[in-house]
Every structure is written in structure tokens, then in C-alpha cells.
Length: 296
Image 1 (cartoon, one colour):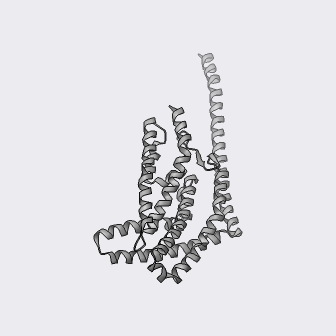
Image 2: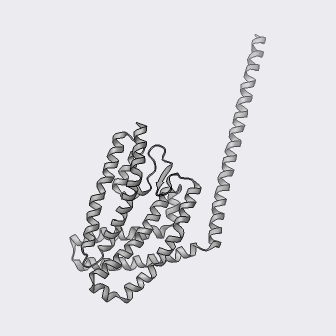
């Protein structure tokens, strides 16, 4: 049975990785095109693509459930949140992740550092694209509002930025050991990712209960807050490129590792002492038994 589980892992790795990436692309399109006052056919395409891709995640979960895979519960999670499938670990050990070009790689500190570096420069460029995009939206506001094509293009550009941030966060949170600590340090990224989704669900609910005008007032407020978070993210990305700050962060990491090493040494010393005492007791017991027999 383990052989079949490994074969399914090998066969599904690439198709499911790209399916999850495309699913995230279409989610980005749906979230941001829904903010357009008169969404066109592009929004319908995104919704239909999501509808067609989703059964793949259900099918994979059913297969692993039928095979009794050790990590089949994670596939149920991927059915709830398909983009998390991007960095699914192997079913047998849970220590390896599949990436394009790299193929299967064991998650180690070196691998985490490599992935983080590969995201660093592209994400800084994408973050800087926020500024000209906002400038276009500000100076060409009337033209964008009067042209559905321009409105769709600006929404898709914003969606692309959201997609990049979400992809990076999904990958990094999947390979990090201290995930809560990572979320705490990257709370701006988390806010940038979650705000459009919360606003979409809220607007959807309001659209069913109240007038359309109130929905668009909410969308306008959310868009302003979202832009502020993106600008804050740009500043944060630039500051993190500062080598002095990088050294300070590495010093903190080094101090944590040194404390862990000291803790391991202390535990080893305690166990060694415990073994020595036990060995001494075992050596004394035969001698005491021999003296007792002679006395008897």
C-alpha cells in the first residue's frame, strides 16, 4: 500500500501544484474584480475556472482517504482552502515538498534560506509596482470609472500584487517551523491577504440584505484601507533590505540557537549523570548480594 501512496504522490505533485497556483490566480481575480462597479466577462471566467478546478482537490482527497495515506487529513484541509495545496508535503514522511525545477526537496534550514532569498528581490519589485498603480488610479480615476476595460485592468493589476503576496506567504508559512512566530513578524502580509477576502464576504452579505449604495461605500472604505496596507508593506520591504537590520535579526536567531544548544548540553549532562548513577547501582547490587549470601 505504501508503494501506491508514493506513486500517487509522485504522479500528482506537479499537476496539483499548478492547479493550486491557478486556483489562487482565479481567486485573486474574483476578489478584485468584484470591487468593480460593472464587472465584465473576466469575472465570469474566473468564477467558472474556480468551479472547474475545485473537483481536483476533492478527487485527490478521496484517493488518499481510500489508500489510507498517513496525512490524508491535510487533503481535507486543502479541500477547504485549495491554495494551501501549493506546498503540500509528501504523504509518507511529511518532510519533503515539491517545487518546480527543484522537484522533491527535504525541508531544512538551508532550503528555507534558499526559498526566502528567491522571493526577496521579485517581491520587492512587485511591492514597488504598488506606487505607480496607485498613481494611475488617482490621476486617471474618471477615465477608469467610465471605461470597464480600464477598470478591469487596474483590478487585475491589484489582484496580481495580492496573488504574489499570498503565494509568498503560503509557501513560507508551509516550510517554517515556528508558524505563529512567522505570522507575528509578517502581520502586514497577513493583513494584506485577509482584508480583501473579509471585505468580499462582508460585501456579499450586505448585497443580499441592504441597498447597493451601502455595499459600494463599504468597498470604497476597504479599498482605501487596502491601499494604506500596501504602501506600509512597500516601506516594510524596503526597510528589511537594510543590512544592519538583517544583522540584528541574525544576532537574535543566533542567540536563540545558542540557548537551544545550551539546553541540549544540559539535558545530555543530566542523562549521562543519570546513566552513571544507574550503572554504579547495578555494580553495587551484586556485591551486596554476595556479602549477604556469605553472611548467611
